[in-house]
Image (tube, rainbow, N blue to C red; front, side):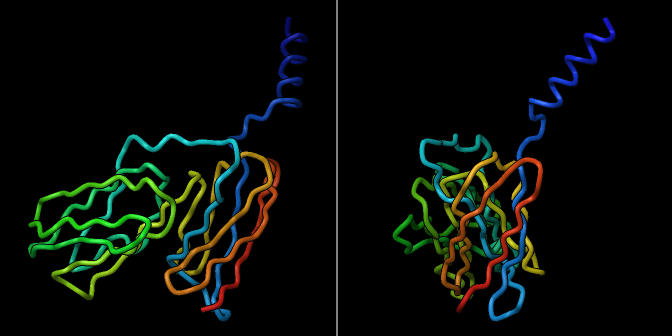
Length: 194
């Protein structure tokens, strides 16, 4: 019985993948400098659809600033826009991807909207013109935002060949091919132009 168990375990370990997927990581730079708040994502995968998350994403307003400055979401995601400031805000977007205007609302209020088309959405405030942020709507759940060092990491990516794109608010988007397997991390670095 013990030998049979060992044989079965060997077969499972040899032929079955217990990993949740591979990892894509790298750095995004512009003119040789690290670039934070860049969104790196896998483009649409033909034949694959992904359910939108059941929990909404959050784009808060604190200290006259949108938090976070850049928020990537999967198509179909609901985003809540709470007002955590004492002052009133009036969030709107003139973007083709998703035009909307919430009007003015006070502290403690929350406005919500579903982002149902891929693309970048700029956010502004009628009351505070210095406020700006972006929601980047993508077609797969495989995305990340670069940190202050320009580093990103996308985990649990199924093995396969993909188109990996980077977006930043003031740089030209760039796309590279990437091959992912579950036994070795894929490293993809981007160098962008303003």
